[in-house]
Image (tube, rainbow, N blue to C red):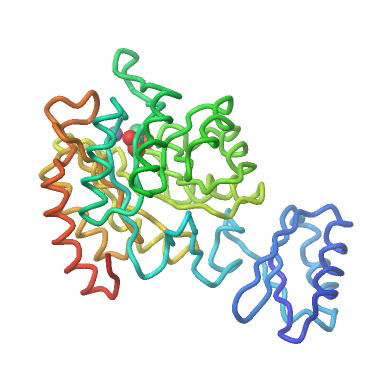
Length: 340
Ligand code: PEP
Ligand code: MN
């Protein structure tokens, strides 16, 4: 349930109610909005809720107590009516300006990373992506250069000033990846790895949570709730396509997930049409659809020579293709009140 404090409530009222709830053994999450302070209460047993709600409602600084019936609470709109803006080193994710994350699927060498980083920055990207630890369906494909790749990403950040987002696959690597990355990416295959979600929930870095390829929106938001429950509210969702019966595309990009999530949660949402389609020619049109549907940004795979990419070449744009797409996106963004 959530407790909405009256606009006249003081800081000591807030402290008092937090202590009251903690004494009852509940988890407490505070959300201070522009107009209201909302206290999220986690862990109240169904049988106790009515009585607790009645007791809390009697406090003069409490405006209202509202039960949240959804299976996710801290990430829900009810808990935090204002949109969350995740701030990463000068880049605001979730505001009017679209965030464009771009770079190679995998970091392959220092030259390749730097070349792509410079090109995508020039075209208007604001965050550099690149895989150092690569999850793969096949045990025989490229698994990434690990810490060496993290160093190459850092070197590209030094040159371009762009923050970096990179995937962490294992709880044992969270500390290492945190030393280099600005945003921790949780990939589709790990969306339900609850120990990893808990670990990144304790990290002092924003987390980009990709949708599990076979996960419902509700399951995805519950995965985000695992992270938020540890106190890390800097979460960015990423729609990257789901498994359907269609085989022409690698995945089926679920454009309807974007407005759905924006209606259910205060978290920003990024679209990944690269993994969503698996085909470079489909990336720009689907990216435009995502922006039109309200996405807060894009994640796009770019490679200087897609034909030689160690991974995901078929869905990678060339730097020129990326630049062209950015020009087209800019017009769509303007049409829906956003900009690049
Ligand atoms: C990636 O971003 O390179 C990646 C592996 O994505 P996903 O987890 O969506 O497959
Ligand atoms: Mn990829």
